[in-house]
Image (tube, rainbow over all chains, first blue to last red; front, side, top):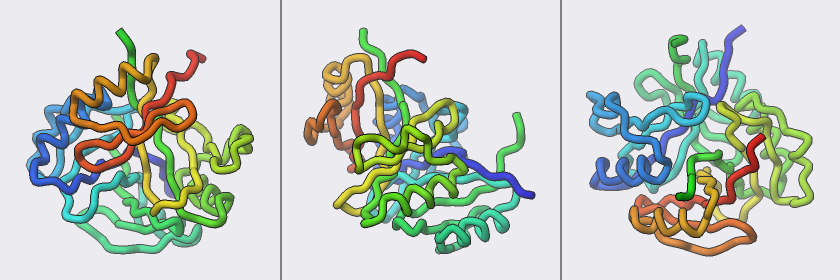
Length: 117
Length: 117
């Protein structure tokens, strides 16, 4: 049986200045931009872990700004099927994760479970 | 000096059936609707606490669905001023909290700090 659960959220920002956006959210949430925030992927800035170690990132996007939730799973295909049975639909597969849409209209992602720390 | 920090998020749902919306998110996140979810305010359903005790609620709204973050503070006025200095603006005061808009366009709320448990 696969496992899954809320692992964090991504603050999607329609912006030309990702660093400025990340600085605002780091200040607002009092979660400094982590060194890992200087990731090789120039679309993301990672903040310090949130409550319970939650993963919080600021992403540069072309669509209107929003917050999207990330669900992690030890088996993202099985998890996507479980979520479909609850009423969600698949939107696309991007790199290593699956983009889904809730029956309430929210987009969210199913991502591979992090390695235990 | 006041304190503040991320306390949780609200899943705002443009829906005629709040219970159905809450059931989806409770199932998706594996966070059951809490007994406190049957709150006197018919617009909200509270889920079991998220990672780190985060407060997660499903709200019925009239605007398009979105997720909004809640920042708690021991002094919401001082916190709103701090956030304004970072570039946010006040939108409105609703009941006991302050609705703000980030420079990235996201709406979020500043809410009174929870009593220590």
